[in-house]
Length: 194
Image (cartoon, rainbow, N blue to C red; front, side, top):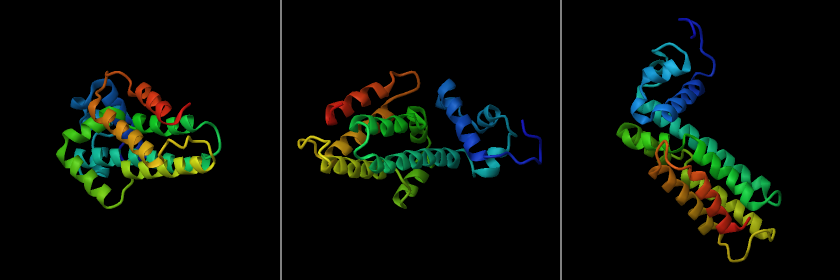
């Protein structure tokens, strides 16, 4: 535990990682600021020093994980022509499902204050599912131009199916439910081949 008055390095990420561990172990009902700071091994008030409250913290956690996944999706375009199309897509999809996964998504839905903050941030342009879908569409269009994607695959429709299914699986799963990554991998293979 960091002593009082000593700066805690990378405090946001440390708290976010701790929250994900609490969610994975004990579910959304166990997520409190005290549980998070205890798991992070830091002072009890640290979360409230950096966030206005638990709703803001949860919103920032979700937005951070969306931004990471969007950056990974946007990097797909640089992979056009390399590796397999399915493997490249799966890497992004698995990051989306792992980035907080069902527990974080479910938590955001149960906290109206966090859900409102997330919606407002997305409307203001924060990266989210739309950004990820657009990046996947651009990647699939590039692969189509390189003749690495069947003519029967419509890039925008495949991207919508991938992101829509990931969203569905995130919103309808819970900790301890069957791993949604298997279904997503099968969907990607069905849409673009292996």
